[in-house]
Length: 342
Image 1 (cartoon, rainbow, N blue to C red):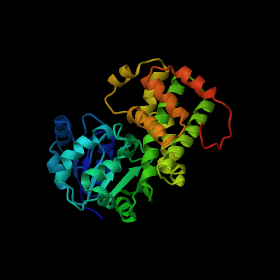
Image 2: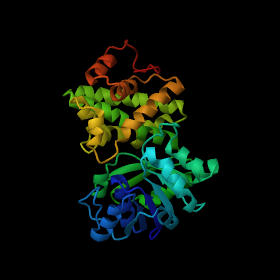
Image 3: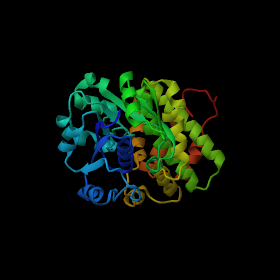
Image 4: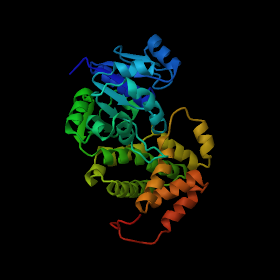
């Protein structure tokens, strides 16, 4: 299946990497960007001047700032890579231009803070209600944008309640360095993809505090327990969290040097303020907003999530990372399999 018409909405590092991958797979790809400088730069140099700046992009990829034109171009797939906090606003403008039967795939890893909606919930709401879910899918897994752009091998998950949608994603994306598995658990896939960024903040803070590998291993393991606990409460399949969009993405984001959320955590552990850290970044660290959403979801579902709670207090209440660690280590002893908390 080549020469399909695909639109990618969102020209950050992840959107750019996926747009280039799809174009190199033989498809005609339109990339929407908010910034005229990005569109002009791609047209003039074949590179994104803001993200993945050293990566030459496929000639089958063209960029535009005209959202209506970009979305109208999508005949075979619309790939959504807009940050979670901007998804609703951009989608409200994009939806009227989208064909009623065009498959829509979300590669955004986050949760809307005000509503606690997953990205597929927002997409369904604005694209026609529950009937639109049959054409929605999620793409997630261990996939740093730069490594994907450099064509380093990885594997991800295409998740949809409609199995035919997962197969569409597999066909369009898969190649010799980008393997695509499928599952039918978009809730669990999105929970894993969003909350791994929260745990990565904590992993980075441990690095900033110069703690050891033991601490990191415990953090990842207990972080996964909390992610799974929330996912189950929201109707996810527990097996999802042992897979690529769960453990796979969690390990990558907590340990990899390209992780933006881990870098934020390192700076927090070194004593910098969240405001100063975010002011110095030119990319979105989804984990910060996702922490606020995860904290609310834990309260909504009556779930004890000690790690998420301490990260929340560190980010938004000024709790020093050292004290957050003491609070976690000082909790009452319990069985590892205790479903009520860490």
